[in-house]
Length: 90
Image 1 (cartoon, rainbow, N blue to C red):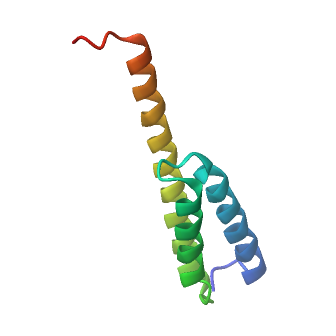
Image 2 (cartoon, one colour):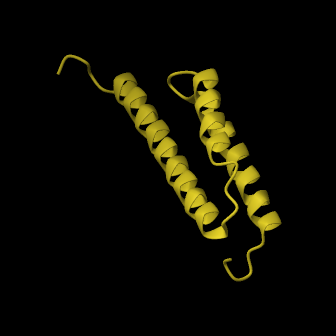
């Protein structure tokens, strides 16, 4: 077990990460329902993990996914601004 990390602390982190991803999924391009179903399936698949190191690895992957979603939204916002403010005749 990872020193200083017990299962209840990791459980709290997992729930917090799940809620954060759900919140970020509201604006997902393929729709919230699609995002929520896939997110739920991904977390449910790993629900039986008991090793703290494996749970930490999965949390790091979830944080990576969170950053990727943020980047996706940033690019989407940038493209919308570019269409809005620059001439489309180029």
